[in-house]
Length: 578
Image 1 (spheres, rainbow, N blue to C red):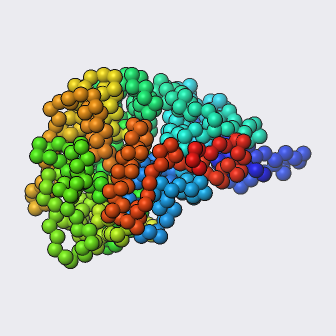
Image 2: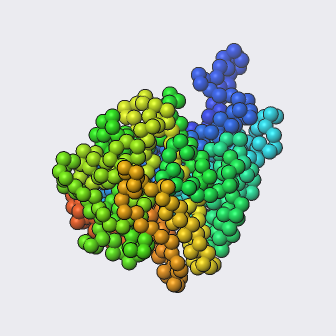
Image 3: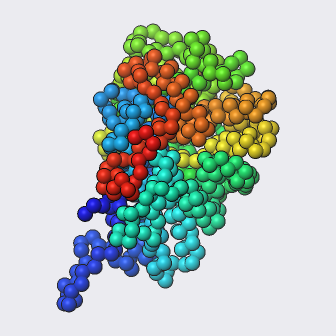
């Protein structure tokens, strides 16, 4: 049967209760083992269970490259981090960071299949909704349909950013009724907008479970979809409403968490800054319910005195660390001079952990030491980062360790799971959209269609939180580095404001999966990515030497060849350049 893997996923979900055996003798009508009856599926409990399965795939489950963390697709491609670790470890990522994508790569197929699995689960629920049992109220039907469409919008948003236009399949199409004939020749944006708009119009402001999407999460996602299409006026209208009236599913008014580092603490999940997040849990009997796709992204060989103990992936780049340099007035170096010999951060590259090293003494943004683990600076509540002892292969990945979304020593045994091969599974949520992100997207809209003064206000709100001295990383009771940060006094013109907003997103949201997508939608990926590769490759010649971003090609990933082979070239058209 010539059925694509995407089709198989959809069919598997939509056909869950469709297998029926017909026989004259009724005693032979025995459902297959494990079969769920229609009555079970269409009850309120059954439908809620199906909806939970749609949420559960946000972290990609067994397909880690489909996770909404986008640590490879958004952060590594955007220059926030290098793959790190050893060259041969998970080598399928090597061509990704070098922009040498191959349509046959397994990681691409994972991203494709994983998103369509989420879509299939949403479609399965929506197909069941007209058959809902009597115990399902009209309000419940509307809410569950809106949640499913919100999530379907999310999965298609992932596909759109990574692959461009892909086949759009909804609950009305199944195998045998045309699913295998759906082409990738139609624009996904109107479909994504329709799902998110339905969710915005029909979801409640608060939910019984704080991890569920609410009206305001849908508003934020819809505004983000508008922004990606440069529909600045439509996006601004929603952002204005969100900033003025938005609240979490638990009823907290949206605001910035007082201390920047607390955004990334498992003990502070579902805070007032969290608009929509992957909900994770530890010690449930399955690490797939924890934070599974960051199990690789911890310092290497830490032993009992550090987190994870494996595997040294996702090492922050030299270029990112340098970006946190500030001038005498506490402002970023928007002219790009942060990479100059005079401004680049001092590192212990090439030194072992026993060789004396004095950390950089220049001015830096305090967010640096919440985003980048560097030698001599306290690594959360574990110990001072020891340098090379926690780095698997410095020549391949550099001297830095990932730090955001890393668990604390105080989390061990409670918000961290010890049941698997690595202790790097945690209850920590991963925030897909947070309020700082919304403020900076709103600032971008104000630059384009509104007021530079309002854009300044939003950017300074984010910087003011970063400047909260109570939120600095400390050592022996004092700031761990020379943290100098201030607010902008004014934006001289539109171009200056735009540059400041773009750079603030880089600093505030580093390592959170946004950077590459931002560069592409701003139309500056060719310049920015190649500048990053030119600089970084001088320091990591083996990993990045000769790497190059090609405009008009590398903005999108190739459609997986597996899917083209299964469906046919007349159904799936390959992206340009592949």
